[in-house]
Amino acid sequence: MWTFARGDLKLRLTLRVAAVSAVCFAAISAYFLFEADRSVHARIDRIAEISAKTLELQQSKIQWVNNPRREFPDLEVIAASVMMPGLCIAYRSSGGDILQRFCGGASGDSSEPPQAFAAFHRYLFNPGREAARPVLSGGSKVGEAVVWVDPAVLTTDAWHEAGRLMVVLAVALPLLCVLVYAALARALRPTRLIRRGLERIAAHDLTARLPPFDLAELSAIGNVFNQLSENLATALAERKELTRRLIALQDDERRHLARELHDEFGQSLAAIRALAASVHQGAAQDCPALLAECDSIARIATAMMETLRGTLFRLRPPDVEELGLAASLQGLISGWNGRSRGQTRFEIAFSGNVESLPAGIAGDLYRIAQEALTNTAKHAGATRVVLHLIMREAQTMSDGGSTGEIELTVEDDGRAGDQTVKSGMGLLGMRERVAGLGGRLSFEIGPSRGSVLRVVIPLAAPPTQGAEDRANVECAA
Ligand SMILES: Nc1ncnc2c1ncn2[C@@H]1O[C@H](COP(=O)(O)OP(=O)(O)O)[C@@H](O)[C@H]1O
Ligand SMILES: [Mg+2]
Image 1 (cartoon, rainbow, N blue to C red):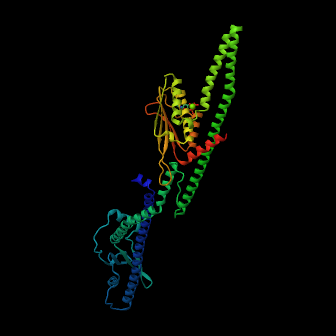
Image 2 (image 1 turned 90 degrees about the vertical axis):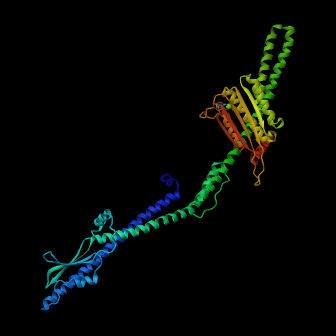
Image 3 (image 1 turned 90 degrees about the horizontal axis):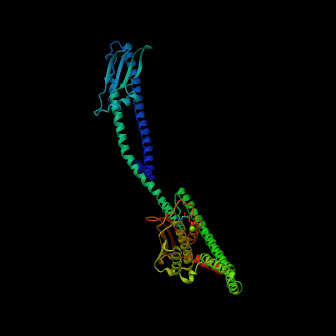
């Protein structure tokens, strides 16, 4: 119950309001009880006053009338007019003896208050205290009129009064709680919208906006929320654009480097090989001792050309647009199977119409697959690496959005990739490409062992447009 109350703001506030109301109610009840006690004692003070005056009159009559028909003191006359349940009127002589006393009986209600309440009431109000007024005759005190109320009657009255107040409290407090809870629930209804908005932002939906609210505080939160999500959307769009340009530049640079290597270095190696062949021909006739060196030069040049070819392949992948992604990836897999010499088996599987993928996305996916396969060869020490490419066709929805996506996974059974290892340039580059396409990348420990790299790219309009832009940059370069 307490945990629930802590969790639910409405319940928590309602309980606080109820507690404050109960305290106020207790204070009001105490005020009523004090007021009742004060008025009872004001009344007995007045009765004592009247009694003293009446007794003084009776004294004077005794002195002036020789044969008074009534004896002194005669409290019956006074008692008849002021008597109430529990009230006692008495005359006390100067010697301290009660010479006459009239007491009204207790009220009909016989229910006794609990001991604890009686003790508490006695402690707070001292209900048995009396009011005494001197009765003077010829300027000197002959006795006093004493009035009090039976403490048991006062305590019982107070107990009944408190009981009535408790009944009112028992009815009013739950009613108040229900009303406060309902009012709070109504006032805080917009917080559900705010939470839903935050959940959408957490799920990367930056189009989430909050409507204006009636409450000023919530309205201020809504404005800040809208401003924040707008800023976040702008920052992400800018980052995406920057990433896109960076990757485009990087690809451009690689292409340029590959061209330079091919045209300059490759040509030079070809020339060296041709020269070695020509020297070999000449030496065969004139100087056979040089033949071995000529062969060595030709062998080294051939080996360098092989290395150059591998480097060029990595720098400038096959034209994915021309070959298609499936064929390019198959070529990549065959290349790795050839290089691993049976130590690692590289496999590939496709699902869906992969060839319908926009060219820009296909190029990036090829680069990502290339780096992921290199990583498995470099770090995993796996016996089996499987590349999956799953195309989930885009379906245009009524609102113009599209639901398609392409998923690339590279799963190996080698050493598990350590999550704590700081991401190197390879993973960073993959992340940048994926961010540029508005997708998600995860790199996790595999179901049995090894690692799984998963990339999901939504097939929505922006990435396609971005990819087209990039293609333009590449053409222009
Ligand atoms: N398939 C994998 N298996 C095990 N570890 C991996 C795998 N791929 C990446 N890693 C780990 O992640 C790190 C970062 O990879 P990467 O960013 O490509 O940098 P680099 O390959 O230059 O070290 C690697 O150093 C390696 O420790
Ligand atoms: Mg790497």
